[in-house]
Amino acid sequence: MASSVFHAPCGAPSIKQLECQKYVGLRPSVTLRFNCVKTKTVTTRRLVVTASKSHDGTTKKLGISDAECEAAVVAGNIPEAPPVPPKPAAPAGTPVVPSLPLSRRPRRNRKSPAMRASFQETNLSPANFVYPLFIHEGEEDTPIGAMPGCYRLGWRHGLVQEVAKARDVGVNSVVLFPKVPDALKSPTGDEAYNDNGLVPRTIWLLKDRYPDLVIYTDVALDPYSSDGHDGIVREDGVIMNDETVHQLCKQAVSQARAGADVVSPSDMMDGRVGAIRAALDAEGFQHVSIMSYTAKYASSFYGPFREALDSNPRFGDKKTYQMNPANYREALVEAQADESEGADILLFSVLGSQVKPGLPYLDVIRLLRDKYPLPIAAYQVSGEYSMIKAGGALKMIDEQRVMMESLMCLRRAGADIILTYFALQAARCLCGEKR
Image (cartoon, rainbow, N blue to C red; front, side, top):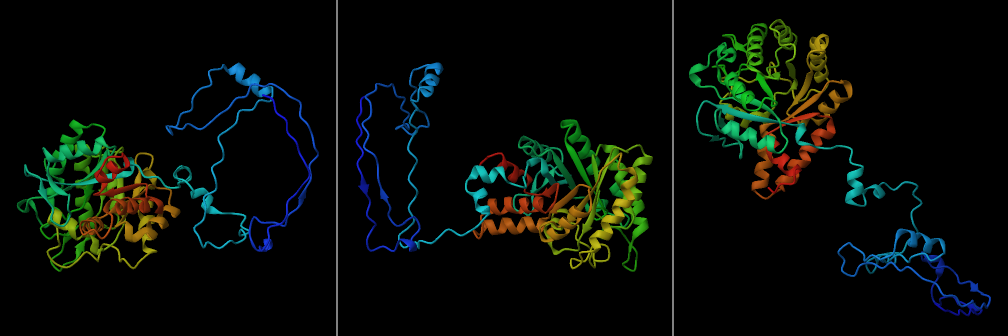
């Protein structure tokens, strides 16, 4: 390729009628002078790289070997790269201002989806979910009015099908809540430790079908109590602590005998974690874990759950054993008690701390996360679930986005696992399935 280039002195006048100092990128002119040079005629072979006009992400190969490409570059024949795209123009009327003298601009790490994904601090996975499932003795799946999309599942059929759906999208942990026939309820809740009761039979069935399924159970008397309380009620209305703990120990052992992986005392009786641990160890169940409802508040968010189990208290409330929602430091007292009661046997089991409900109590989750090395669980309870469902049905919120954001907030606060009725729906979203 032959070429002759001539350079001559050149003066570039300044742009008139513009005060260059007031505009970014404009400077007073300077006089540019060049020497006149005649170049020597040469013949070269050039490599040209152009962007694909088809915009399919591919470029046409040159048909030369790697060695020829390297030789051309060594000889100074550098391939031309595609032109740098022009800088996007600002809308008309945008003020021209000097750049702010910032040494750090956090937005640089948020400028693209790939960069945001690279620097994401909290991640959500189906493995973080525990799926609460309601079971009953019937054959049919009965919808729960206050919890759209949730059912009392027939333990032989509907439950097995729901667990299969959950496992298909990576949710392999469930927690069982039974709706017990009224005829089997009593003031002392003896049905809770019936080895042939609804929960033990369900555990046997699930373990037979899915041996690696992680099964959590609820340890409390309210589903079995004719009074609807978590403990035995004295005739003057007082919830009896130590006598209730005695019953809970038998319940936990019965569940462990059926094959439960984790027993979860939700009753909030004092001293029950240590007593249950001792009872499990005495029966040879050192491998069974205890997830204590460490900070369970006397919350108004439990209403739909009690409808699902038909377990509303027959009288009074649960404020004498569940925590005051106004209290923050008390959560540490409960956590310290649970840790001390299980700390000497952590070699055989994991004592998890649970905050219930989760979303309104993110500060408590973070408090426990910062204070204790033990696994932290959060329960996104029925009231939270129902509110999101109702808002989505009324088109007041985007149900899927709010659901995923709420779960991410629980993880960000410090929860290792989340008990949520959204487990199946959220896992499908994470797996890329359509709503």
